[in-house]
Image (tube, rainbow, N blue to C red; front, side):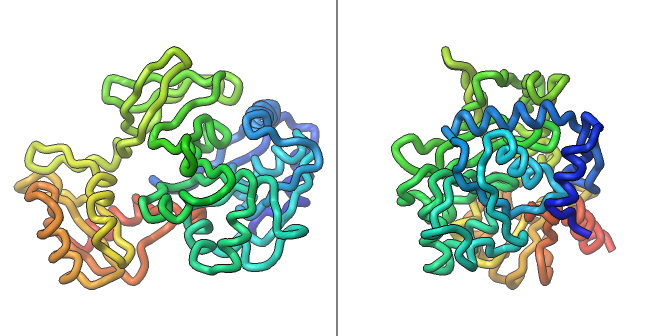
Length: 332
């Protein structure tokens, strides 16, 4: 049973200094954890200040309160005195009018919700009117970026996770400030580990330095570090002595495959690991595209048709389940 707003507020207002949250489950089973309410307030204050939100502004809650993204929207509203507009979490949160004149000051969505809104003229117009739109919880591909670049108001991609109580860095998707590089909040320090993974130092929201699984390119500036996501450490495929980033292969295929697909890996006696492609389309089409677009070592050695690419409840690829499907299909 999904958590209701009343249930979250009851937990927020009780005597405990902690709130129970769970991770998204994109790389494994969701895990419960306790987080401090004061740190959640600090995270909310930082976002509200950055976006210039004021008391009485409207904020849309359209994500599940079972996860940190939904909880933090409520905390931001509480911290700043925002007027919270709630809709049932779904793939089409803007299907109906949600505010007077369809104008919202602030909304947070996952890429799937934004993509769906762009496909329907009425929903797209409501999306355009949101003054501050932040998108998190998954990769934003080229086609989604193209659909948002002419929006008149600010659209941001966020970087963060449950452990950092939502985002610690943002990048603009549209306008003259659009960039592929994330800029952390001033109170957040970033560096890289020996294996090029992002290390986050955000004492306001996380008691300890956090070594992530995200492989990044980092540039240090006078204002601090900026970083660009290259992929996840656990999505590296070591095939025949060559390291292949699954996300990079997905990026190269994106302009050429219309059906949903995902890249994963499978153990192999000869190569150590092989690249495997799961597709909701036909295997023949996927193979033809891969042989045309990809260089030899990037090409999948296994192709699998699935009715649906597994997703988590928050709309991210369920990478662990995808890996299991590949292993079962290839090794059986």
